[in-house]
Image: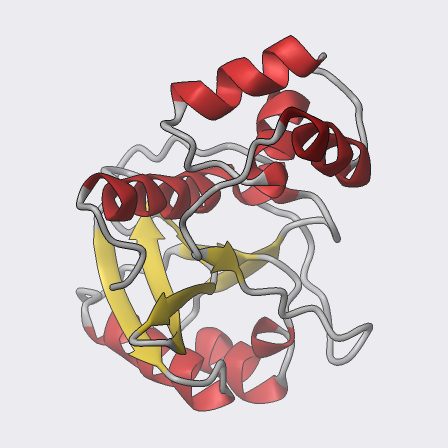
Length: 200
């Protein structure tokens, strides 16, 4: 197990922390808890130098959670058929910076994004408005996210419904349900390291 963890860590140039390695192990059918992976990495002296981490936006059962309609069907037949979104946290200039993008599963294009110093409702609202404005008449993509509070509040869900978009959510605590977005953040993390900086 330690050998596999070390192999994954070095394969990704030391950029993966225990959460990303935990997800990678899950993809390979290995069922270990995140705490176990973190403990083994500590024993091996493996630590990611990049301070980019997933923002944990879950605040309990507030608002309404949508069904997992996407069901890990990450292939899209056309643009604006399936979108995914999430929030991640950077360190920039010694301060936190939050990135909120929308990714099109057809070609991996980032169709809209916003950044802010705080993970507010307004951050996600601005991002969503940009995404909606990019749609042509008749385009109504499915929009998948985790169960973070930003995506469960009435204003967000009403904005989707008003435009005829279908909302989908990952199962609680299951990073693989939004794996493409997770992978995008992981590649972004690697690029930060290759560029020789942990800041954006």
